[in-house]
Image (cartoon, rainbow, N blue to C red; front, side):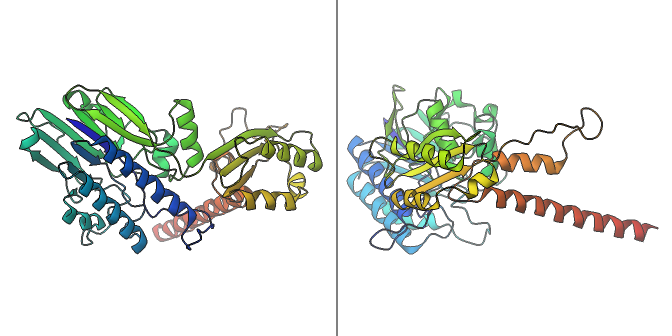
Length: 399
């Protein structure tokens, strides 16, 4: 009894301003290509069961081209695997905020796919001696995660966060409505637990896994890439699991294009001309094939503002034309306070904390870090002003 586990397709995801010859967003086309390759691989494996663990689309209301593409690929999947059981649940990106609004995933039910989008359901497939408890990410009241004692194979299909598994940066950037503890999950009770939401392939227990996404579509793609390198994961892919024997295999899916995080540079003591040369050398050393058509980031630390202004803008524009995205992440030198303020051991203010966090936060695209810090501090000041005004009015009324 072989099962294929796929999650976090995020069809319709768009990023950067580059278009295909046909006028579509290039990253949206990349994500579609990754899903097509995943369908190809799944068909070649000829599994008995296919489970899709949520976030089929990137938005609750995807575009018509994204819907048509998804329908065509799911139709191909069910046509080529006529005897397979296919179950799909909704993730937080698929679930409308209003209970009165229908979920787009119901369009795929006529293809023979069992779609669970509103509330958790226990699905029984007696011909396979299989029970699937399908738990979409709808933020509803908790249900007991218990297997069916009458089934030989019990699969838990769930989109959400398992506490203690996701890095804090991931959990805070894209919250799932469903959060459970490892004890609630009870992985040892299940034949297999197929999880969705976390975009990096990750073992939670011997029988429980996140399959990861099929492309880099999270709010922090560089943190995601760093996680994969830290755990020596070969990129994106799908899981094949034999429910009878426990045999487990992660099948990598070839990415549409490479993500390249160039070795960082320290600009301490360098002139603008020197730094231009270092940046050029880092770009030239990108192998294989250079930076062309890739998503590239280069972090440069300890860059004074006047040096940043003097960099060769013509060269930087050239790098941006060559790559799909070239993000030069310039980071200011850390401020060293030679004279303490206040009493020894003074705790940093909220403004200090916000400033430090925004200075060190990983950014995507061509976001201006200084503008981000300034805007963040402005919002904080505005909030303080509103609070102070409300407090003054309350005190005046009380007096």
